[in-house]
Image 1 (cartoon, rainbow, N blue to C red):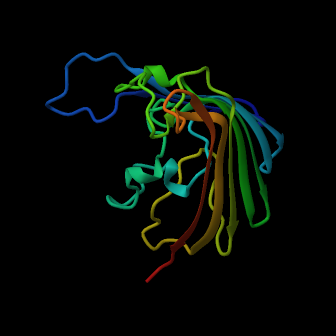
Image 2 (cartoon, rainbow, N blue to C red; image 1 turned 135 degrees about the vertical axis):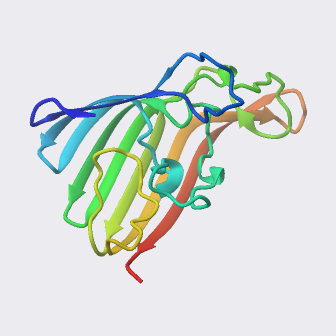
Amino acid sequence: MGQITDRIFIYTQVGENNFNYLSDRKLGLFVHDAVSEYAVIKNKFSVGTGLSVWSGLSRFYSPSVVIVMGISAPLVFKSTNDVTDQFLRKLSIYTKEKINSFDYWFIVSRPLAFQKFAVYSSVISENANFSSKPPNLQYNGYFMYELKEQESNTIPYMVGTYLGKRKVRNIGAEFVSQKNAMWQLAENKLDTVEKNMLQLSGDIFYDVPP
């Protein structure tokens, strides 16, 4: 990451996931994040774009893997992980702002094609699944009120624990919305019904010294 000027910030992450002694050797690296950001109002309001993990839904949709307890971020928080995104990343435009104790970010993303999902199936059944049509824009929002100490929003990865070094008490509310994201067979088993996707959640984060 780098602060190129007093208003321009870039963040890039390149590598592999879960490499270990059993992994295939000499794998090609891939881009995790590639973001450019401009501070419209320094230290308050910024606009950014790129391949980004900025999103809504929950605090631990994008957890900081180096500062999180082992069981604090189960995959249930990552509802579209590698289905319509690249390990949570999507091509996005986002805004983020801090207003005293209120912190929020709003994101407009283009989800990745469902056809590229590792276990993609073109079969349409009675059970709703992601549509194979070109995806509509996805809208995400996260709104957080910080009751005690404020957290950094420089990058989107949320701290899992401060190990008792800070007093943090936050309340968050989130949403993810996408028009005609899903489809399924109608009751007559002939027609296809398209449905909007709306995901809502809330969270409370409490981390204080013992």
